[in-house]
Length: 239
Image (tube, rainbow, N blue to C red; front, top):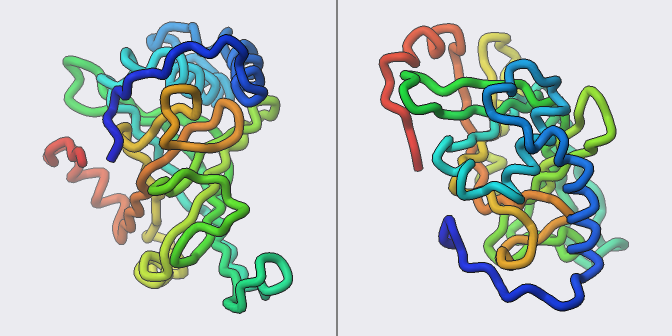
């Protein structure tokens, strides 16, 4: 696992195209990103998403102590098997798992017994099921996914692009296909696995202003109502 605060590389005399595009996008996010955290509850979902992306890129040291955790509650699933021979030369069929999600952000505040949760929009978790990431999925070695967003839409659209092994898929499929309405599955991204895709953080890759993800966590709940009732008495879990 890379360090939470890696040392940054020397400033380049001529920024790359990727870096220029990142800076241009962050300028668009800055009006929401520069607002104080106390105003989060009054923002729209899209504004909260822009706030998060801007602060992960520009204000990471100050954001880390709040232990930002992203959660994607799965609302529907599509599993696709395609013949990948024509696309990649691989004789094995390609398997794709597309999860429609409702995304939320959880932050911890000093003096509060529980974290506060904010909606940040709908979107997708698009995952390839394979022993290793396909060549067309731009990820660094050891990286599982990247988080991107269409910041021009409302409701906001967040996209998690990544991969999981077949073992993870086999473990989770019975939960994802459970017809019981009291069951749910969340994709969880903890604060210590999120890193901005920019100079100095070369162990993650993705589109301009994306957030690199080093690990994916899946949580299956059988009785969410009972879970909420008992949560106050549970210790705050960290990895």
